[in-house]
Image (cartoon, rainbow, N blue to C red; front, side):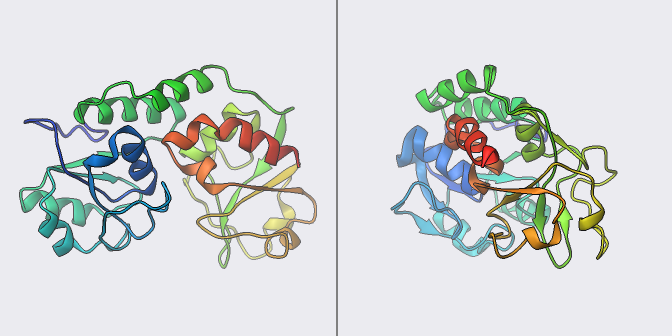
Length: 247
């Protein structure tokens, strides 16, 4: 079953459309020949030669249907429920992922690879080993913006938040009622934290765009792909993020 409890039945899929950039990378690393379509935002691996089906939020469903895949892979957060429902109504199986922790992501990837009849690919074995005992920075309290105008930060129960927790970072907003709380206009300067962590996606923060709102915190700029994607990038994520957090 996928992360939402929907089973996949039948023969292992031989043609797959991915609506999730991280899963596109994961499937390509497992067996690139399975992929027949991906979103315009699927940038890894470089040079991936498959049909493009639009964005994650607004995929071209007609294009997906024309490709007649055996399976579409989606994510509960990145993709809309109505698009998943429309594809299923057209008779196309959709596998939905929804991990909120590293452990859940690894289990989810294990299940997906099993459905693809490609269990235990080398990259996934490596990811399991790396996250069994990841390195940690000295304990730090941080706020992690993901957007501005309005300011939005990581809150409770997010995959990226769990990645940082596993690396020694305490998220100031981890106990928020919201997964992605919005801050009032003058909230940033009032947040008590040692560190402000700026990923380069979904908002492309830079040294000239972001840190000025958090003068009380040391800024750290990190790879959004290594912070938020669950797939082959997880194998190098701890080392990459630790180096970036150290400054």
